[in-house]
Length: 70
Image 1 (cartoon, rainbow, N blue to C red):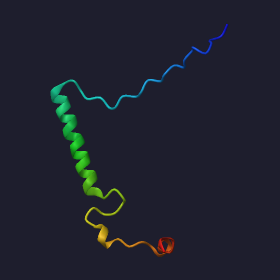
Image 2: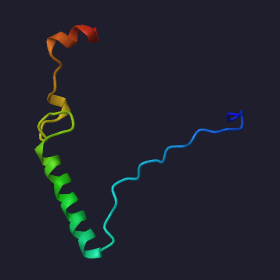
Image 3: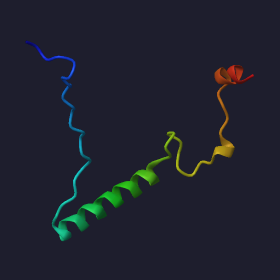
Image 4: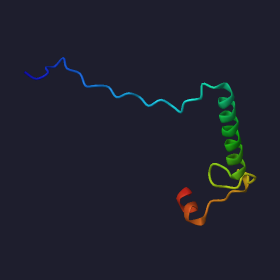
């Protein structure tokens, strides 16, 4: 007979994040490279696609969006 009400579905294994090297010297190099990439990304531009130096005070909505805001 088939599995009755006591049968449970198999659980999927959760994906683990990116692993770090066990070698201390290699780990340090990986961490330095990651820090450099983060710094370059921060200098390249803001999260919303605006240049990094431009503040939110200078931002103005386009006319198409102003009509939705009232």
